[in-house]
Structure formats: C-alpha cells, structure tokens
Image 1 (cartoon, helix red, strand yellow):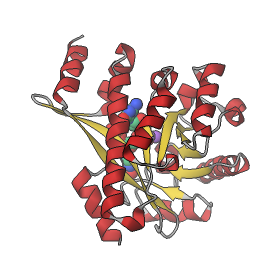
Image 2 (spheres, helix red, strand yellow):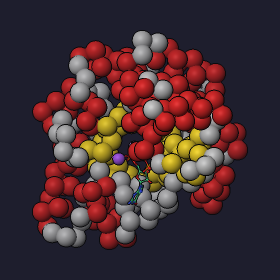
Image 3 (tube, helix red, strand yellow):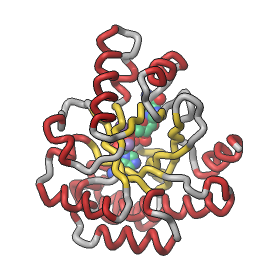
Length: 256
Ligand code: G
Ligand code: G
Ligand code: MN
Ligand code: NA
C-alpha cells in the first residue's frame, strides 16, 4: 500500500523517465532501433527499477495511466529524433505494454490519436508483450492484437523461452518479432545443447514469419554465434546499456 501511494504521488509529480537501449541489426549494425525502459527517480529512495513497481502498477490499475505516459513519451522522442536526424525518419521504438493496457476498450483509438498527434507512422512503434501474458488471456485479447496489427502496429514477444511456453499457440498470435530471453544468450558457450536450442527457436520464428532479436548480448563471441545462426537483431551491453534521452541522442549522432 505504501508503494501504491508512492506510485500515485510519483505519477502526479512526474518522477519517471524513459531510458532507451539500442537494438542493432546483425551482423553489421547498419540498422538501429530502441527499446524504451521506464525508470523511477524516487526523491528519497533513488532509482527504483521497473521490476519493483510495474507489478504493483499492474495490480492497482495504475499501469493504464503510466503506460499511456510511456507511449506518449516514446512518440515524442521519435518526433524529436526525426526532426534532428532526417536520415532516421523511420526510426522505431519498442514499448513494453501490459495486457491490462491492451484490454482497455479505447486503447486502439488512443494509440491512433497519439500517432496522428505526433505525426508518427504506425510501423515506428512496436509493442512488446511477454510470452506469459499471451497465455493468461483469451480470444478477446487476440482480437485486440489483430485490430492494432491492422493499423500497422507491430508486436514483439518478449522474454521468449522463460518457461511459460506458448509453443502450441504461438501461430495464433499476430506477432512480428520474437525476442529470445537473455538467459539463453548467457549460456552460449557452456554447452553445444544451448546453441541447438537457440538455433531451433530461430528456425521456429522464421518458419512463422517472425524476425528475431537476441537480448542480453554481452560478448563478441555471442554476437558472432548469433549472426551465424541468422538472428537479425541484437540488444545488450556489448552494444550499449539503456541510455537516457540525451545519451541516446548522442549515440545516434555518433553512428552518422
Ligand atoms: O530496464 P530493466 O531491465 O530493469 O527492466 C526490467 C523489466 O521491466 C523489463 O524486462 C520490462 O519487461 C519491464 N519494463 C520496463 N519498462 C516498462 C514499461 O514501460 N512498461 C512495462 N509494462 N514494463 C516495463
Ligand atoms: O524484460 P525486458 O527484456 O524488457 O528487459 C530488458 C532489460 O534487460 C533492461 O532493463 C536491461 O537493463 C536488461 N539488459 C539489457 N541488456 C542486457 C545485457 O546485456 N545483460 C544483462 N545482464 N541485462 C541486460
Ligand atoms: Mn522488453
Ligand atoms: Na526480455
């Protein structure tokens, strides 16, 4: 309850910011996107990581308001970058969304209105939904995904392989991108079986028409192996940690 009240106050006082972690194309890093990651700068407790407050925001319904702020802030950032870097006019940001947000009746209208307010094309925002959330929801959820998809919005399945296997139903969802959880990437090199698992996930994704992001790439050797396996995208500390808006802007500038 303490945390819940704290969260309400923090939303009022705008204590949140978005950090942006680069997502680069493999093997040459010639294409760039970002994942938006929320941070809470608590006046007394300092930085509170999202896994400590997103679950509370979800339980209390505050995720609706907070999630809308995240989408607005990400769209605003895209419009700033488009202005500043015309050659990045199609740059995309991945935004994590909770199932509660998608289930709001007016969600797709809200998103459409925001896209037009900020003059952003629908393929420039991608929603990340966790694999476990796909399984906890019913047919209405799939309808919502399909409606957003028909507007041109793409979906990523996040944390894939974390033990809530959606394997038997994966093809039912209109997913464009599969993100392999970083626990798989971390174990590359520990045994040959790990590579075979990753190879199989990539083959599965490609078979279903999805491209693949490997999360948590920390070493050159992991990067090389994933490139050889045909993984299209990489994200991780090898490229960059999540950056604040100023540093992410410098990151783009340095690529040009
Ligand atoms: O940035 P960090 O690794 O601490 O993030 C931990 C987790 O918090 C991420 O895996 C992500 O799923 C979740 N998260 C980060 N930002 C957001 C957000 O804006 N909305 C939601 N729903 N989850 C987020
Ligand atoms: O669950 P989600 O994938 O949305 O979480 C992304 C989180 O993973 C970010 O909060 C980020 O801090 C963390 N992360 C990103 N890259 C790496 C990495 O290379 N190694 C580790 N250990 N964590 C990472
Ligand atoms: Mn994510
Ligand atoms: Na993840």
